[in-house]
Image 1: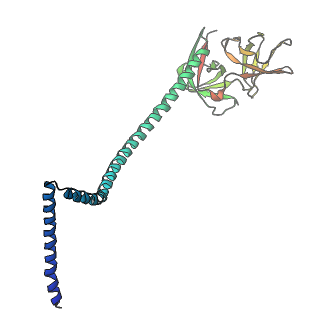
Image 2: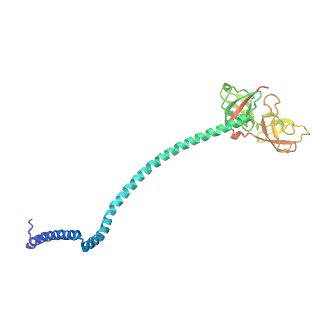
Image 3: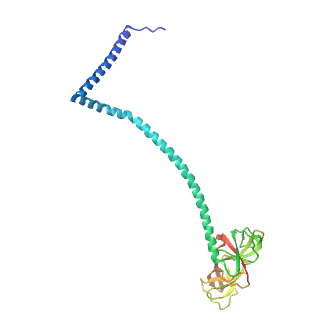
Length: 276
């Protein structure tokens, strides 16, 4: 297929080239004229230059806006990348700090328990072994528990067991590295005690409840609610003066005692080797 050029196309092409050349020549002449007028200090040239600047300035401002936006976007992306890295680092540091905080809190609690325990341990004629209190694992005794220490650590049968609040019970079974503790509330528990104010001696007897009672009290005993009960030392198993509990009820000849030591909250205990 052959495309034939018309006579009009040949006429139009030279005319277009001529117009372009004339426009360029005109612009050069205008620029030269303005330059000469500016050099001569002509106020008209200054005014024309100012008018052109007023026209071109908004166009340049619009043209530069995309570049400014691209620069701002690049800065924003760089800052966001830096913030992401810093955030990841802070999260890692926060996890490490939480781990150290948990470890420090555990050590603080253990230190507090051991310090409080030292205040209750009798110093005279006694030595003691500290062990961790373990929850009950079942058996013939309703109120008993285990400690992670046994004959290998020097614990013996019938030794008293205390925590930072007072008496918990006594050792009834021994293994190489464990021992079972008979708690005060068990029906088989018997502890010689004395009331601190009235000095009435009796036996703290467990009844499988949270409130053991005072047995073998004299008929004339007058014990008030709120009176403290401590070990009397009779029988040579429990050292005298260990805090046991407080009287919460004294009705119909039955005196109930609330133990100071709560086995459910015990963590560390001391097993006392008392030399009678």
